[in-house]
Length: 224
Figure 1 (tube, rainbow, N blue to C red):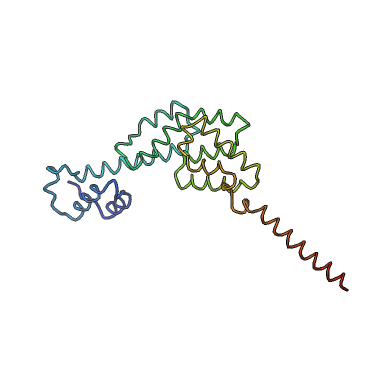
Figure 2: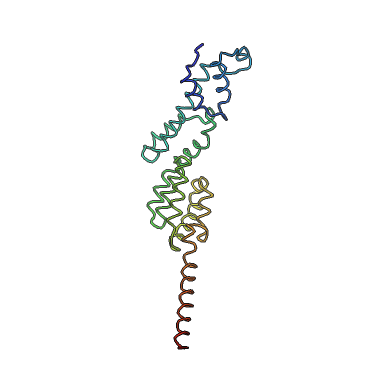
């Protein structure tokens, strides 16, 4: 039975997900410290070799998913389908939600073509939706926020709301993947940056102050 080097041990432990791979982490620790593991066979626990193989398989799955997220719209239908079929959410439960999103998006990929071809839809929203669905969560969050920051006029927010409602009606599978975000866009008064929402009130207040100042000046001149 192989004993891991200190560097290998530390590297592997840092990469292990304690939620899904706690058994592997414990087995690796026992092996490194030279602790007895007489119950491993009877209890069904992994050996060190099995723990390392399991860890490597999960690592490869994460890398495959990351590659798919980057290349999703550049792969052919056959290649995308083949790569998705190689992913097993049961063996990597921490990736199951992401794999489900990618498979749903793959089955609806032609829908994005239709959406972009129809000029009545908000093109920027459609592009942002595609990115938000397939990219990692941190990058997807940035895409959503950037889109919201660009909703600076009433007409733009109105078109975003209309597009969101039509996606809900015509492409429900896509809508469900980004339901919360798209529902937010359906209310033009609550979507968009705060500066955009309060622009009209800010302009009114400024002009009100200017008018008051002008009236005061006129009164002073009249008294003189």
